[in-house]
Image: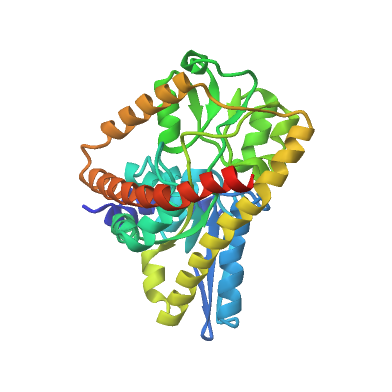
Amino acid sequence: MSRRHFLKTGAGAAGAAAVAGTGLITSAPAISQGREKLVMVTTWGRGLAGVFDAAQRVADSVNAMSDGTLEIEIKAQGELVSGLPAVFDAVTTGQADMYHGADYYWVGQHPAFAFFTAVPFGMTALELNNWYYHMGGHELHRELGEEFGLVSFQAGNTGAQSGGWFRKEINSADDFKGLKFRMPGLGGAALGKLGASVQTLPGSEVYQALASGAIDGTEWIGPWADEKAGFQEVTKFYYTSGFHEPGAGLQVGINADRWASLKPHHQKMIEIACGDANSWNLHQYLANNAIALDRLVAGGVQTLEFPDSVWDAFGAASQEVLDENMDDEFFAKTHDSVMKSMKLSARWADLSDGIYTRQRTRVAG
């Protein structure tokens, strides 16, 4: 039995009925007089810097392009469903039409979802887009989605993410033992190999968890989004480079049956809106991060770098996590596709942009 059939007819359908019975989801998709509405649930709290902006960008673009014939209504985290698993379940069971989130939240459904957001020591944003649009990534995303009744698109990117906020300096890999740290995806699994107690929390819950001591540290995104979240009010140790998300993609996933019910020109609007948000969101982060970092440092935040020995431990733990999933045929196929694309992209980037930026710094300062 396929995963999609199970969701529609078996325990998954029963679970959807239970959710509907709670009052969290109360109505089917709206279709009236040639005008359609899609309900988008998100993994983001309303107004979270960057990530919610990307979801809003998709919705606004579709609403504008369709001239009112197709409307996307956003429901932020907690407004229609609560918790990260509930977002995935609401869409795959047909109780909501689409989601905006980070697909590595669904590694419990299939570990290969991580590749479309980020994996440890994986692709930068540029490399991810190269793979996704031109070297087979989107096709693999669609293939994975078929197992869950999803049609998916890249719809945002945070760029390189920071190593995170800590209550004390990290001087060796042993400092992660027993550390309660928020990090989703396969990066979190790698920290678990180092002895950390890894937490996966929605972004809207992270500040309170850090402030209350429920967690000892957290990664989030980067200086701009982290400043907006207020983590500098709790701790001042900030590691500016991390191993876990070198270019984290954000995604729209649409219920496949709902997608099939849309007119082709509405489908194309959604595809175009997602592509626009993917580029726009990446540059939103890049435009804001350096200025935000200056403000954080002026406010007393210490910017730090993990020692080489810790990077080495990250690498060994990350490889162990990847190896543990290689017995899954689709995971292995996706991994091999990613590695081939990443090596090609990195080789040319180093010979072109890499040489240029080094020489620019030397010559022009």
